[in-house]
Image 1: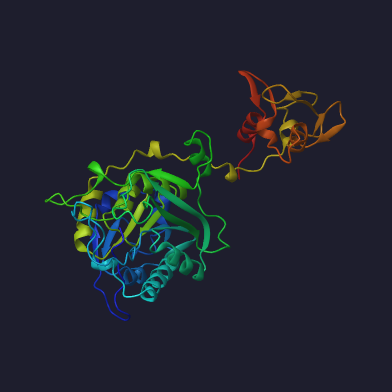
Image 2: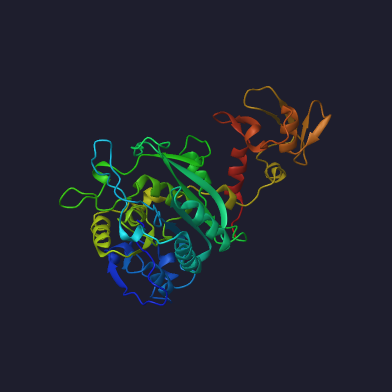
Length: 402
């Protein structure tokens, strides 16, 4: 990733399209997504475009991608080679694409690619951009200036960071990701909350992610054993991003494609990708890597349904449907509190002195400001005590769908 330095203003960069098993990749794309592009054959699904990223972005159709992952140049500002205490050289980023003459030049580059990215994002698409302390704050400033709306900043904690060889600073053990929507008005962006929580032992996923840097068999190397790309990201990091903020069949754009981690993970998880890469050598390595990826079977990609997408059900509707009877006693899971169901769908606590909704009565019983009554209150079911949410789920199965 991160090899698509802008050309000089007004220059025309040669754009090449490298097809990466396009026909096979498209056959596994859900028809609904494929049909949405029938009118515009210029969307290069599952392809790597070789050339200047800003010129390539200008050629993509507006509002054509669902997610952007960007790993732009760090702008490390290295002065000379970096060596270890034993005088061996550190394999750090010293390529021309990471060299900028000034902060203002880097800001102009950032503004140009962010404007291009914003144009091709769908209304509810989101952007993840990753960087180090060298560049992420400048990128974040430009990002806000361009009208993006920041949803989260995420810390990638590295399990095995490179040590600080000179002993003059703390070990730089993390990178920062900014997750942003296209605008403050974009509210219907994808966030697979229920799936993430279920896969995290029913706990909300935090904004600090712990992954090792890319090593071992996953690390691409050339014939001499040297790293193919200096900043190859681990597939686990991209898997977290794609499974968090996309659905099967979505289109993922990476304007700094590099070694192709985004494309490899997208193909594995049934997403389409568009890769922009300046260096043909990196594009060739990415192409070979992605060609070797086998997509997961569709049965394994079935998404956990979002509760937010379900129709809102009133407790009174569940009572009216006879799934919970008036006069039935509900209790919390440990049997410390009890309430009686009334005919209008409210609950009565403490002999009828306290009445209200399942949520209000649950909160009052515990002395708390709020409570989810669907999961707090329980009743006797065929397999023992069950939350009243089970009755709501059964009601949804009975209710007609639009």
